[in-house]
Image (cartoon, rainbow, N blue to C red; front, side, top):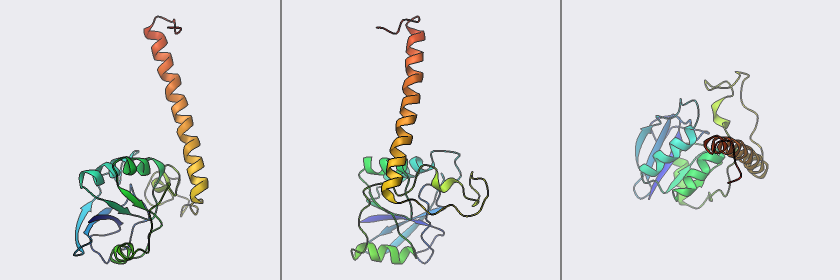
Length: 176
């Protein structure tokens, strides 16, 4: 089975990167023989949408499982839609993470464990304010609620814009 692990480097002995969408590498590991292929993440420096793009890349690579430290709501939904199992809360070396997964030490995540744009800042070269390490991630349940509220807000804004466009196209009459 092909497993993707977020990694700080190109080998099985490198550390699991805690960020999914902005991880510098994905190690694609065949769990049958532990052969790994390093895939540099072309989305790590994107201004936005890194998690979604990385999730689509995992789908293109025909990955069945993603092992990572953290996974935000947009990436999580995209991975789920592609039928890819997400395991978050993973740390240590890539080799150990895969071995632990194969031996049943990890179970699937049923929700994202961080909020939107979690890996984008925190003074690590991302888009944050440079104030040092990010705060500890909220509990998964709180993060999921916050993510849903943020998504509802975005959808409401999108709906309002669409209604305005429709109204203009209909000549100001939005009753039809």
